[in-house]
Length: 384
Image 1 (tube, rainbow, N blue to C red):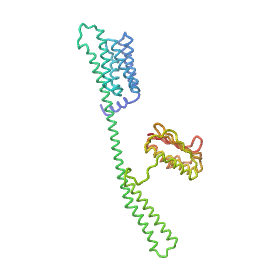
Image 2 (tube, rainbow, N blue to C red):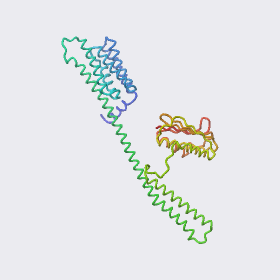
Image 3 (cartoon, rainbow, N blue to C red):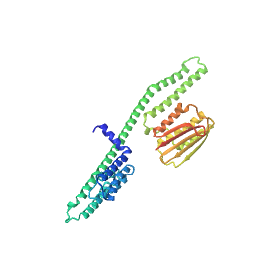
Image 4 (spheres, rainbow, N blue to C red):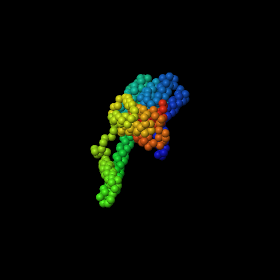
């Protein structure tokens, strides 16, 4: 079997329609078999049809496969032979029970063996044998072996898929580690460039500006002050470059000298800053916070920060509302105002694009646009 055909077959089996179509096909086969080979017992007919039809729900409710297996054994117990549809349905049901680990495989096989023994005993009672021997238990042995094979196959497939998922997760962790290492190397290269090229050039500017006030005769007071300002700006730039170079040279876990990243605990300070410059804002928090990932809190903080910045920039004097909703599996953030709304910022603003990137990076969504009652509205949902 070629790889493309195998992949198509796996995709078809994994599709939501597969259990319904296969269950329907088995039910149709059972109906045709009952017409071709009439069964004089309603119990047999009902058991054969139920064993096939119950498999349609095996993907949604794997435990329903037990109904199919029991119905197949009941139909066999009520008649002298086992129908083809019931045999196929019973085996597929045992495979499903092992595949989805409805119970421990030993318990499933033990239960199937006990029911098979009861069916065999029922048949022996109807045969009225003149003598008893182990050969009469051949039915029980065959049914038990078939149950064991089907359950073992389903459990083996489940174990293989779990191994594949674990291997994929391990590969993803290795890839993430390699990406972090590559980022560290790139940061070190940038730090070297800053130190060797930019810092050197800025230091030259500072020295030349400082020395010009002493080496250049007849400088006016205004020119002397200008040179001093150039030197001071160059020294400040040098200090900032040294700080930035130190940040780039160390990993995230080693940056003890930098300020910690803000969390949602700092929203009060953010709101206070907005009010200190004349803005009006209300902060509403709903739900239990619990423990959130640091990345989730940082992204939510930055989204609120950028939203309030946009209010000050594009709607000065507008009243703003910030709402944080803690939900069981996600964090909802809403920033609204009653201003006119910034024209064109939805498509051209870099701040909004940055907020959308932050939300998308964590698998969330962010929508911006006019509010239902006017103004501008920013809504984000960040899962964790």
